[in-house]
Image 1 (cartoon, rainbow, N blue to C red):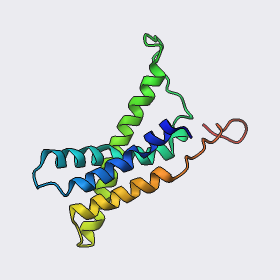
Image 2 (image 1 turned 180 degrees about the vertical axis):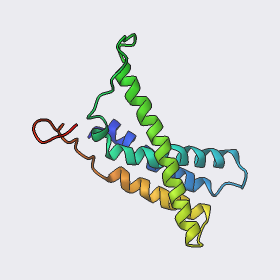
Image 3 (image 1 turned 30 degrees about the vertical axis):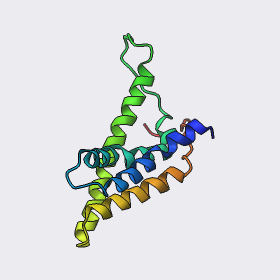
Length: 141
């Protein structure tokens, strides 16, 4: 692993720990809100999607018949990962908040700490391998 890969891998957990440390700022602080919003919008999803990245990249994007953009596949994959990161993050935030609400233990600090720990653990997990494409006999399409 190169140092650049390590830095990219550790950005989501760093954002979580930064958002946790921003809780020490006064209520209503713009910096506190920005740190929490950025982490909660993209942090957990980015860390979780990094684990299954090779499996997502196994099927290349197919573009329109008339290709005007030679880099369509690359741009399409980047947009797909960005949107998945945001949507997975929102889903995980809602799930964590719902669990704490159901347990009558909801607080922003608990949800943020839980998500930061989840993001940190996900950053240290190895990536999943892409399964080979299934071809041949016995597969019904």
